[in-house]
Structure formats: structure tokens, C-alpha cells
Image (cartoon, rainbow, N blue to C red; front, side, top):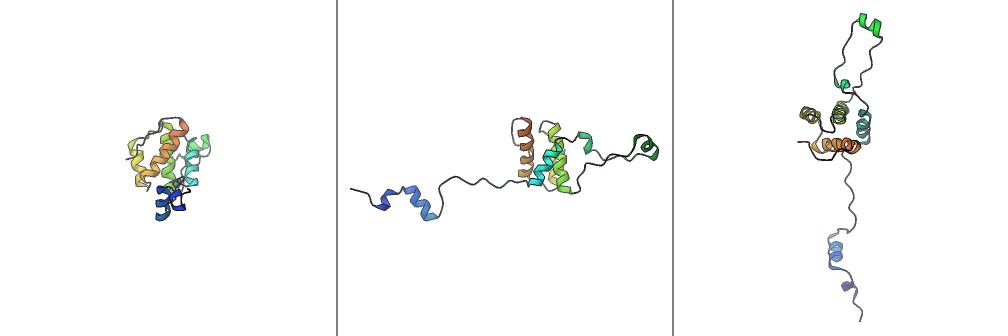
Length: 135
């Protein structure tokens, strides 16, 4: 009247137990950006576009009237600075930075997945529709 133990298990579960696969929720992939890199993106939200320009050196006469020059917001780490520059442009151009910014990010060693994640984070925070744009 009762089924034996081997018949009570579904064929899919038996195949999974034989092959070693587990049936259940998949684990989300690890983030492509570190927490420090994500923090740089958030900080870049408050940076103005003029922070991307190289700092100008004023003469002593101008400094006499204007006071000390402002500290440069550029980061010492080249990779973090590339993330900051791309993020600033993304924040100010509705998450659609110019193509040259994407090229500069790639030249600094950022991969396509990382660039897409940076743009996705800025789009999500600014409310723009998400679409992949990195080449």
C-alpha cells in the first residue's frame, strides 16, 4: 500500500542528490565594487564638475587677496580617482557620462561590469531608468 522510500522522492530531487547539486535559492554573486569604492561613488555625489579640472596655480598677488588655494579633491589612488571622475560625470549628466569618460575609466583598469555597476548605482539613486551603456 505504501510506496517504498526510493519512489517517494521526486526524480528531480534524486538527480540533484546524485550529482551533488542543491535545489534552493541561489546565492547572489559577490559585488564587483568594494565598500571603499562604493563610498567614493557616494562622496562624488556632492562634488561639482569643476573638481574634475586640474587645479590652477595662482600667483602670490592673487593669493594675497583671495587667501589660500582650496585643497584638491583628487584622490591619491589612481583607481579610486577614476571611479570618482566617472561618478561625478554620471551624477551631473543624469547617469549618462560622455564616451570619453568611459574610455578613461577603462584605461584606469575598470572592467565593463564595474563601470556598469557604477552607472547603475548612480541611476538607482537619481531615479533614472537603468540600462547598460558601458562598451
